[in-house]
Every structure is written in C-alpha cells, then in structure tokens.
Amino acid sequence: NAGVTQTPKFQVLKTGQSMTLQCAQDMNHNSMYWYRQDPGMGLRLIYYSASEGTTDKGEVPNGYNVSRLNKREFSLRLESAAPSQTSVYFCASSEQGRGEETQYFGPGTRLLVL
Amino acid sequence: QQQVKQSPQSLIVQKGGISIINCAYENTAFDYFPWYQQFPGKGPALLIAIRPDVSEKKEGRFTISFNKSAKQFSLHIMDSQPGDSATYFCAASRETSGSRLTFGEGTQLTVNP
Image (cartoon, rainbow over the protein chains, first blue to last red):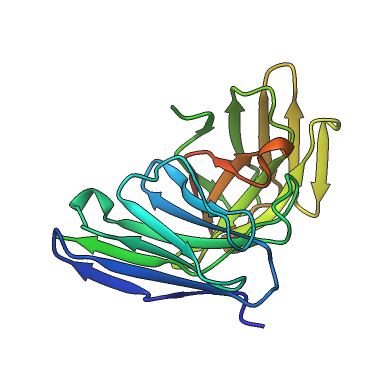
C-alpha cells in the first residue's frame, strides 16, 4: 500500500511555462485535495474533488486547474507559471469527504518558478 | 483572512519539558479540530483530533485542550522528546463543508537533547 504518491518530487520552471503535477492514491478514497504550503501561511486548499467526476475551488484556485481523471488520480495543472506559484504542493485524500475524516497526505512536490 | 490563527511560530523546548501550541478560530460553525504533524521533507500526518463536545482529549503524551467559549484550543506535548521535533499544524472543519480543512500557520517545534 503506497498511500498517496506524487510526481515529480521537485521541478524548476521558467515564468510562463506550464506543467502538471500528478497525484494518485491506492486507498479507494472518494475525496482528494490539492494544497500549497508556504512559510508562515500553513496549508491552503487550492482545489478539491469530493468524488470522482466533481471538482470545486478552494481558498486559492487562481492560476490552477485540476482534473479528476478517475477515482485514483487527481492532477493539478499550472497553465502559465508565475514566481508567486513557487511553493510546496501537497495532494491528500480522504475516505468519504466527511467532516471528521483523516486526510492522508502525499510527500509533496517542490516547485520553483524563476 | 486567516480563520485559524496559530502561535507561536516557532518553539524551542528542552528534552523532558512541556511543549504548548495554541490556536484560535473565528468560525463558530467549526466542529472538528485536528492537529497534524509534519517532519521535514514529508507530508503532514494526523496526530490527534477533538470535537467541541469535550474539553480535553489525551493520547499518550499528546493532549488537546479545548475552550469553546473562548474559541481556542491547544496542543500539549508532555515529556517532549527530540523525535517530536517537527512542524505542527492545527486545523478546523465543519461537517457541512465535508472534510475541507482550514489550517493554522504552523509551529516549528525543536526539542533539544
């Protein structure tokens, strides 16, 4: 059981380039999330998917798009990267998307935009 | 606007001491308050959680104290160990928003041997 996996682990982009961050979970969870972590700001929700086929904006969605490819996979796309998107990105999943559920996090993707 | 505010930003404690991290929230609709622990280079992992119908929850050396009237909750780590050195995040959610979590800013805890 790998849990939540993320690729790549580290990426350097130039301003204006695009990329897709990949996330997969093998726990048969319905809900998946993308967060960004910045110093002094905690983790902020970018997008989430309550179930396969649905996605919703979180706290900081501007500049990002997501795709819930199937139950296992949830990708995050930066269409035109900006230095303000330099961050550590975490994907997470939870079983049913209910209030008291544990969220399981991946190891993160460190993104540097020059 | 940060709906969950966490302090201190960093904390240094001697081995065997008590570590205390505080959080305050604004939204009275929050009804679930977890703490996540994150080691360097890793993703956060659930440490302990509480609902507002109890004032305290203890799991081993870790205790959450909850004050509903003050809209505050805190994490106490008793007999702190160097292995507890990590970043700790408080969070809050409400049932009607599913398991969407609002996180505090994080506290970097260092426990010196």
